[in-house]
Image (cartoon, rainbow, N blue to C red; front, side, top):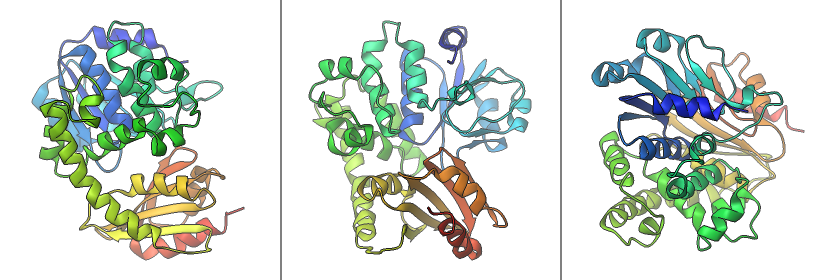
Amino acid sequence: MPDYAALKRELDECKNPLFFFHDDTDGLCSFLQFYKYKKEGHWTIVKSRPLLDDRFFGKVEEYDPDKIFVFDVAEVDQGFIDKAKRPIIWVDHHEPLDRERVSYFNPRKDTPARNIPTTLLCYNTLQDDTIAPAIMWIAMVGSIADWHMPAWKEEFCARYPQLLDKHVTKPEVALFDQPVGKLARILQFLTKGPIKDVKRNILTLLKIREPIELLEQTTGEGAFLFKRYKATEKEYLELWKDLQAKKTKDPLLVFAYTENKTSFTGELATEAIYRHPEKLVIICREKSGEMRCSLRSARQEVLPMLKKALIGIQGYGGGHEYACGAAIQRDDFARFLENLREQLK
């Protein structure tokens, strides 16, 4: 089990933290909880590939933090760690990596390994604090978005009966068929678009105190963010309509689109596997000669399949057992699909 007391000490004993977090609901909700508790520091969102490397060192120089916190980022480059020359606290739940000079909180390093969303790791760190009731809804949203139902679901349902039916036990049902899932989609879509718009969205989101502000636009901040969300949702629904139009008996559900549209590969793949659990879902956005993909499976672990499919292929990828990301050179994509197809049981 991660040492939550040690993680909280790391947060308490800094004065100018710098937070890096991945641009999905899990990463965002992790950051929101720690920032609402700490109420100070700076932050930067890690968009696209979940990799913290030299591209981000300028932020370290700009903000001169005394500690660096990294949430839900699958890979932190050793060169970045060495160059930063500051304590780095890395909270994550992707496949564990070996790194030096970093405090690494990852439940998949435990024996036995466990997959707990980063959001929930952050909440567990703060749940004995007075901040816990105020961030419970954020922790639930981030957990549901990563298909995980927290053990304290009954307490949440008693506090927010309008967000989650107490009889719902499956996180995927909560995500797609309950109001708490709509909150997850709102937060996810607020990380889309130009970085200046995303920054404004997150600055506004930090002012939100209760979920009803977003769902019913009861405050100016909630109304502003909901309007931003609806504009992004329109783009998503257009792509979802095209995806749904694909009728195939192929066990692979492959859908590709071009870079002139916003990246929704993860969101499309997650909804597609919920609607089509019998398929191996591969959603791709073509950009700069690469097919940037999100892969999902409900019945067979996709991570080992991905590793085998990449042998002899120009590309890279990784992630969780049933949900992965990959980038494949366009010329190798057809062979990559065949490599996956050969592994289907």
